[in-house]
Length: 358
Image (cartoon, rainbow, N blue to C red; front, side, top):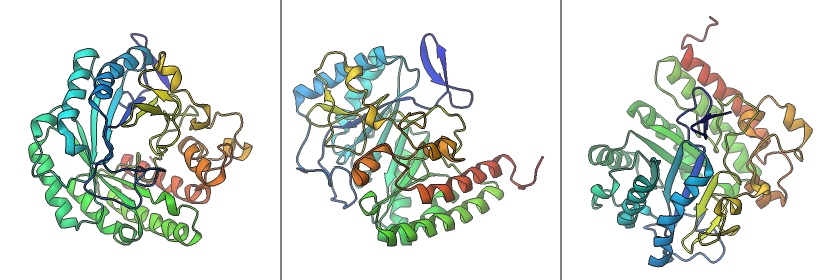
């Protein structure tokens, strides 16, 4: 999986630009919305007014370069989430300025609901390369307008549409897909994980996933640039090595507004340390969150499954939440066994749109 470049790890051939260390920043829980499927909204003790204080923020500006110096990873990414990160674009600028002053640079990503695109200071976002827009419940026409504003006023090299598949978005997911593909945007769909074990929801989700794959196959054959990385449920279907690309519990620094840190983007109650602790990288090593088929405690059936290098036995946090253990199969095993081969077929169609063997 890895090669050493000036003693810093990078992805193997074809994945050199894929970030292998992720700084996930929840600088604030303030938001313009209260979506029922939001990770932060569903955590114990959620408070919409919580924001990182100035002292902690100043420490963060020192801490990110400190972690970068010891993580020995070539490609790092800083991801701004919330809450709504566009409420404080000044802090996004301060973080990216510190990154470029004190490291050899990182990718910058903002995940937003785009409610504020008409009023933000775009100069604060000049170093952001990727913006992902959560469609929430707005009409597709309004999503198109907001993404057009982002495209005209930012320096991003690509935009992604994010949709959590609640009842409303599950119904219109094909319309969202049609708009995204034909407009040249990437797509990212998450299930509503708080409905994850409801058999009716799982059945509807699987049916929609198959319909979605039918549509994407057609677009790939017609020559559209269909991206499957992170398209569904964090999956990387094109990854074909046994080593895991997932940084969870190993190369992920999730920072919360109070300065605590954890190993998971979706779990805001499990904390492994703070940004004030010595030896910060050690605080991010949490075996229970390792998203990796090489874990010796995983089921033997997972280790021989044809989908293992994309699924890696499923998200450990999902299993902690629903099964109270991280050692079993994916909570979406039945869904992934059907969908991962279809996503891989879409990748093959991109290489050979005719669908015939060469």
